[in-house]
Length: 282
Image 1 (cartoon, rainbow, N blue to C red):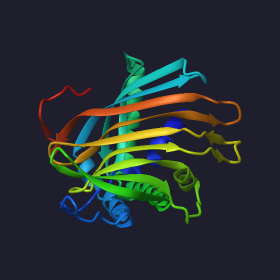
Image 2 (cartoon, rainbow, N blue to C red):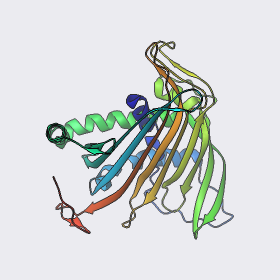
Image 3 (cartoon, rainbow, N blue to C red):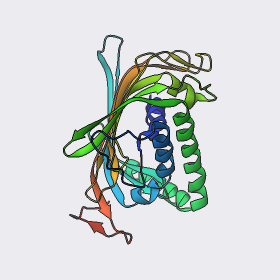
């Protein structure tokens, strides 16, 4: 279940649309070229690491497994601290299912976090991982198109609304692209900054992995991601949620819902001095 959830969120990393230049447009002016907008998003996503490095946030995960009629079978929750090292997200679990970790679990978390921090403090090692992630984003973008764009004014800002549709002329080469080709939905983008505000997509067909022997993602799989600006203008994801019907391996066939909220973000200076109220550190 956790691997499926992480795959869905990772596959949607492209949602963090970045723009390096302002594009304040007249109300009736032409919309930006959709293909160029996506390519600009990909290029600027690679520059996001330095912005992320300045933040530490609190992440709350909730994953619910249900039966085919929506009745809850099992729910798991976790609260974590999240920070970035050379563009790689590192999470330290603080509690599970409403209970603080035991002394032994806390020690294991500290050891794991230290190990990952030292690993990705090596820029070459971190670059290999971010290059892999960027390639996944590029593959995903290549299989999709933005269509039927329109402009609206929200709270004095120009917001672009597009439908997300598969590229009909594209032949998928890998799993990410096969996933992209069965997803449709909508996306909203802040035109001035190029930042993604909201994305809501749903699968319109089944997707079999390994001929169905490895996993199946069924029609109706839903994912929603929302970003919001921080006080200094940096946009961060504050909500990722979804639901669906998926089978992993041969017999597991769970119906699931997931929700990940991110908040209480603390901004740090380049010298790691916290800006805002201090908090205890274990």
